[in-house]
Image 1 (cartoon, helix red, strand yellow):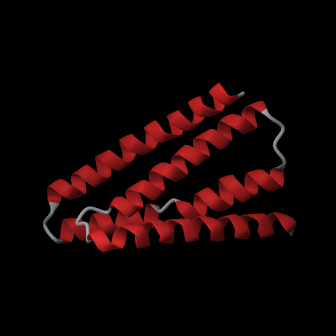
Image 2: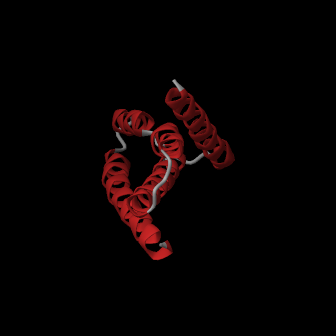
Length: 123
């Protein structure tokens, strides 16, 4: 039962961080969904780093559940990404939708890789 608690706490923290990024960028009234992209990039970086560390260190399951499952799950925003891409398509902004799809995929893959490299450099 304690495992659910760690996922719950991590998910809440991740969601609050995602909301904070959206609030910080709201005054700029951006057409492109930068807040979602930034949240996904950072979540991938954290995930990659933690996966790298857990492969080298004996990190407690509760900490992995807190960060990997909870925080990264609450912080990454695939459903929001999909909705915002759909909205761009509905608005006829095909180029922006394509940039969002391809850019998010490439940058998030690079972020996972960077996190793994960061973990390898640290330990």
